[in-house]
Length: 309
Image (cartoon, rainbow, N blue to C red; front, side, top):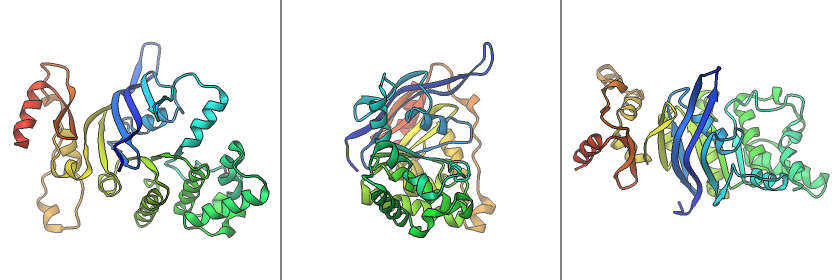
């Protein structure tokens, strides 16, 4: 993993108006970096703002406030059509629902080749067809599948088609928005292994959004934990699992089941109670150990430092 920053998120906010005077703060001040070649896992319970974060980074939503820098360039700055096309080629997204994210009226060939057509990456129909067949084989499907329609495939196969579509324009960065949550457990590992293989072969950088902590640990280099629109902890994958600091992270980890009846019978689950936090000051994101950041007050920060020692 490189130490060169590819994506920089600075105090990102995404607020939605839900009534005359009502606002939902789906994302409320996120700051983190994603380095070239790494997989940054973003986890948290449903409704915490993970998917909204991904969609705002790729500019499916315009940010309410803050900055997203991609290769040093502001994603949410003013851009003409050509600049947006260039940006869209470098950043792609794999969506959560492989049933809804593919146009049922288009053949697999046309779905995958849509990006090739928009960006003019195929010089003629033969080159277009050859590229689609190459992408199908890259994601573990057969070239004969090109003329079929999405309804003829299983969920795992449809997600592979979605991955092939994202790869078609040779992106540098892919946002995978819960790409395995709609799949059977037996298929989830296959898709995650495919993503890891593609990352090594094509030097890709991922933002992997999920709520399954065990799968996120398997694929991620670093993990950020979200709670109600804010990051509460960021650390290397192994460090986060061995030494979770924030009580919410501890509660998530305590809920992961293990295939051990004796352990499960005696397992102590940790329930997070936000009312027990120190309310004497507004919490800040602080580095309690090298590369290990926690949202905490000064008093909590001192306590975390003692625990590490």
